[in-house]
Length: 295
Image 1 (cartoon, rainbow, N blue to C red):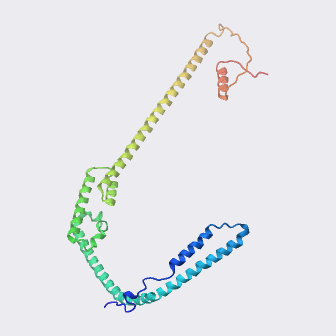
Image 2 (image 1 turned 90 degrees about the vertical axis):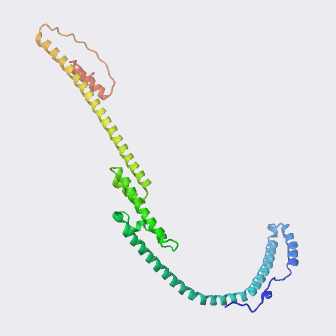
Image 3 (image 1 turned 180 degrees about the horizontal axis):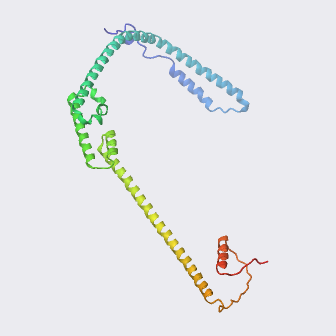
């Protein structure tokens, strides 16, 4: 079966459309040169619009002729194209049927191969089945025809051995964060990622311990400062009480011989905060100094 062109023959196709191209090009170029030097003003707008209409008419005439010739050239091709597509459609139908059967066979072979891989996994996974499920270990590329069962089984065994060794390594650290480290490892199957998680958790713990120690020291210093202040206040209070007690004893011991102190009067104003003024008032009271409002 071969497509044969009866008409036109190879030499019968239109190779060139001949027309007075050069003649028109030279004539129009010369004419267009005149328009380039024209300057239109408000008074000559009517002439400008007339010239533009004339040039647009000339352009349209050329465009209409170009489209007419194109249609004449394309008509036989478009008919030919439609006919060829009808023939191609007849060919494509069995291609689709065959392609469907090929895909069904290939899909069946992939399912069988996946079943073999699953069976091999079940035989070799052992105690890791709970942490390394088949979906985690399986790769879609295993189903490619270029991937042999020998290379697949070798890769599976290698992965199982590596995971076993890595988990033993993690358990060997004896870390309090073993569960978190294993969780990262089993999600990534990457020992370096698990080690990074171990380092991160330990760093967080170290910083928390430092913070607690700083807080403890701060509380200890605050407690000592408060105790020292209370001790100083208590000592000062005790001294005042002792002084009062001594004075009272002297007065009680010889009340007749104690000379009456001479009193003086002084008027003055003071400026201070409420706390300062109240402190001064208390001082006057504590030392039996009379005071009153100045009228």
